[in-house]
Image 1 (tube, rainbow, N blue to C red):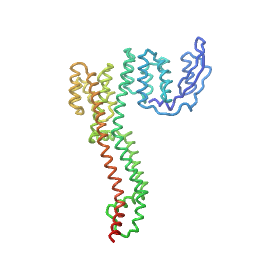
Image 2: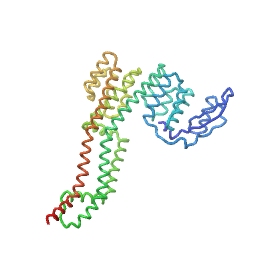
Image 3: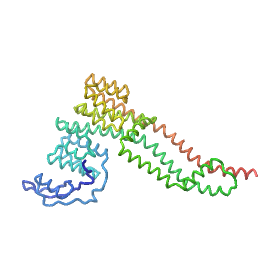
Image 4: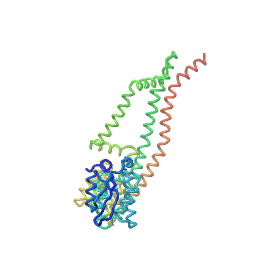
Length: 408
C-alpha cells in the first residue's frame, strides 16, 4: 500500500530549459531531489536549479473525505467549463487551502503530465481514492465521459459525507452528554463532597442513607480515581484496538449497533441509503453488476451488510435476480425489494436505486432531527436528577440539623 503523501512528498521549486531552449520554471512534488530531477528530465526539461520549498509553508494538516469530495467537484466543474485536465489540476491544487491536499493534487498532476492515466494516478493514493472512484474514473476515460462521471463521483461523495455527518451527530450527542455528566460527577466526588464530609463529622448524628451512600462513593473516587480513569481509558483503547484488528469484534459491534432502539433504525436506514447510492452510481456508469457488488459491499460501512452483500453477489453471478437475493438476505425492507424488482423489469435499476437512496437519505435526516428533539428533554432530566441528587444528598444533613436546632 502506498504511503501517505503528507509523510513522503516534498515540494521543489525548479528552473530549467526545455528541448527548444526556452526557459521554464515551476514547482514539482517528489520524495527527494533526484526523483524530481529525473521527473523533469523525463518531461524534456534540463533543470538548472532545484530547491526544496520551505517547510514552514507546508503546515501539517490531514486530508479528509470532505477535501476529496470538494476536489472532485472542482475538477468536474473545471472540465465542464472546457479547462484542460492538467491545467485544472494546477488551478485546483494551487488554490487549495490545505497544504497536504495541494501536495496530493500536484503529485497526481505530475503523473498525468508524464502520460499516466488519471485512474492509474489516483490508484497510487489508495488512502484517499478508493476502488469505486478509480473504477469510475477508468470507465470515464475509456468511454470519453470523464467529466460526467466526475460529477457523479462528486455527488456520490457529497451524499455519503452528508449521511456520515448525520450519523455522527446522532451518536455524538448522547455520548458527549454522558462524558460531560461523568466528568462533572467525578469533580464533585473528588473535590466538593469531601469538604462536606469533613463538615458532617462534627455533627454528632447519623447521616441520612442517601448522604452516607454519596460520601462512601466519594471516598472510592478519592482513593481510586486513578484506577477508575485508567480502567475507562484502557477499555476505550482496548475497544479501538479490537475494532482495528478483530473481525469478530467488528461483526459483534455492528450487529449490536443495529439492535439499539432508535439508533439501530437510523444506522439501518443510513446503510441502505449508502448501498443504494453506491450501486446506483456504478450502474449509471455502466459497471457490471457482479463487479459492482464487491465495491458496494466494501462501501456499506457495516460488517453485517458487507457479508450479506457479498453473498448476494455470489447469487447474482449464478443468474439470481438482484431483488430475489436482496429478499433472501433479510436485511432490506420490502419496499426496497419491490422497487428494485420494478426497476429490473423496466430496465431502470439505476434510477430506482437513486430514488431509494434519496428516500432513505431524507428519512435519516428526519430521524436524526427527531432523535435530537427527543433526547434534549431526556438529557436535561438525566442531568437534573444526577446533579440534583448529589446536591440534595449534601444538604439533607444540613436541613435536618437546622430543623433540630429550630425545634430545640
